Amino acid sequence: MKLVVLGMKKFSLLILFCYSAICFSQSKNEKEERIDSSDFPEIAIRYFSDISNQIKNLRFFRESDGQKKSFEAKFKLKKLHYSIEFDTIGKLEDIEILIREKDIPKDVFKKMMAYYTLNFDKVRHIKIQKQYINVSQIIDQEFINSVIKNSSELHTHFEIIAEVTLKKERFLKEFTFKSTGIFEKSRPISSGSYEYAFY
Image (cartoon, rainbow, N blue to C red; front, side, top):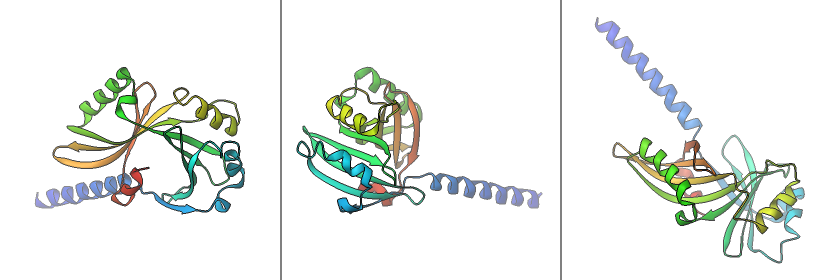
């Protein structure tokens, strides 16, 4: 009997270890470094020539999460903070604009809070962004220009970094909600990526 119990304990520990490894591998562990414009994908750098006289504090970054590499341009325009991400060859991945809780429509925010209430004891938003993904047939440069001109429209998702509490344990997670407020996915954020939670 003792052997059976011992065997079950070892099996349980093995399952727990595997689960932890899977969760860790799916966590957000980004590293970000500032780069010169000359190191940015050539195709993507051209997109900013048309708006260079409108934007402020244009900066370029290279990001890596251990599996994927990407490039990001950050700037400020009309008091809004933009982040535009590209893959290694310069194809647009998404556009994000930093917003506040009060900028989320009430009915959408209510759905988000319903999800949090169902899954966590407490939640505190740290960073909220509107996310724009080009699901249309228009080219990347036209899509970027259309988002800049109509930033209140077109967005497909909300990306939120939040501190959540469950059973007295606090941890950071990145949540993605559809523009309607319906939960889509989440992943834990490692402590090493915490500094990148802020613009």
